[in-house]
Image (cartoon, rainbow, N blue to C red):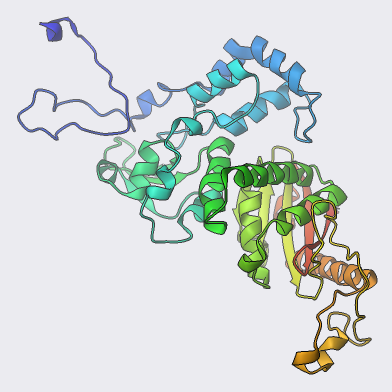
Amino acid sequence: AVSDKIRHLIITGVTQFNELLTFSGMNNFTDITFDPKYSTLCGFTADEIRSYYEPIVKQIFDKLKNGKYPDRPKSLDDMFAMILDWYDGYSWDGITKVLNPHSVLSFCKYKGFARYWYDTAGPGFLQKLQIKDEDFFRNFSNNSSFKAAVTYQQTKTISPESSLLATGYLTVAKAEGNSDGFADKTFELTIPNVEVRISYAQDYLLGKIYPDISNNDQLRFKDLAVNFCSLFCDTKADASSDLLSSLLASIPYDHHTASESFYKSHLSTIFAFAQGMLSIEPHVGDGRPDFLIETRKQYLIIEVKYHKSYATAANRTLDNPSGIPQNDGETATADDPGKTITDALPRQNRKPKRITDEQLLKLLDDGIADAFDQISDNDYVLGFLHRNKKVWGVAISIVGRTGVKIKFKAFEML
C-alpha cells in the first residue's frame, strides 16, 4: 500500500480538516501551525534573503535606483529594507518573522515591487466577508495590532478573523498564554506588510468610498495615492500638496461632505498606501494626533485642519491641482475672510462665489499655524526624539474641496 511508503506527510493549506471525519484514518494529524519549532518552515528569513538572493537583488537595485519614483532605493541596504517592508512580517509565534516566498520569487522574476501574492487570491474575497463593523478593515489598515484576539480553537471556526488569518491577509502580532505549549495561547492579529496593506486599501477601502468606481479609476487613484505617499514621506511639501489636491478633486461632488472628519477618513485610506507603519489617532504625548507614519528613517506626526469656504472651483482639474481659483469672484467681508458678501443677501439672490487667492492662502496658512500649535502644545514629538530617527511635525491645511497646503517642520532634542 502507498501508506506503507510514507514516513512523513506535511499538508499545507487554509483549511484545518483533522478530526472532521470521526471514522476516517485521516483524522489524527498533528497541527504544527502555531508551534514555535516550525515558525520558519514556510517562508524566507531576512538572513536567507541576504545569503541566497543578494546577486539578483543587486541587479534589481541597479535597475530601480534611477527610477522615477521618489521612494526608489538609495543603496543596496535600502533595497533589502524595502523588500522586508513589502513582503516580510508573517509570523505564527509573534516573534519570528518570514517573508512570503511567492512574492519574493515573483519579485526576483519580474524585477520590481508589486502585490504578487495578493493577486493570486479571489478579487472579491474581502468584499464577500460579512463584516458588520464598518471600521473593521480600516482598523486593520492601521498597522497597530487588532484589538480582538483569536484563540487557537477559534481558528477552526469560520469567522472573519480566522478566515483572514488562515488565508494570509493577517498574521500573528503577539502570542500570549502558557509558554510551555501553544494550543491554549491567544493571538493578536495584524496586517503583515506593505503588500497586503496596500491591497486592503485598494480593494476594500476604495470600494467603500466609491461603491461604483471602475477598475481604471481605481488603478488611477491607487497610482496617485502611491505617488503622493512617496512625495509626502520624502517631505516634498509643494509636490505632495498638489497631488493631494488632485486626489481630493477626484472625489465625486455628490459624495462630498464639508467636514473635517470626511477629509480625515479619506486621508486614512490614502495614507494606507504609504510604505511605513501607519497609526490613526495614536495616544501620543498629551493627546492624539490625526496620523503617525513611521518609516525606516523617520517619524511623521500629522495634524489635519479643515476650513469650509466657497472655494469650490468648478474648473478645478488635474491641470489646476493647487486649489487656486482661476476666475474672478466676489470678495469676502473684511471682518471674516471665510464669509462672502453673498451671506448678507436674500437666499434667492445668492450666487456663491469663490474667495480671492489672497483669502484662500490666508485660510490655508491659518490652518497650518493651528496644526503646528496643536502639535507643540500637546507635546506630540517628545516621545520620539530619542529614537535615532528624524522627527517631523506635519501640518495639512485643507480649504473648501481641494485647496491644500502641506508644511513640514523638523524637531530635534534641545
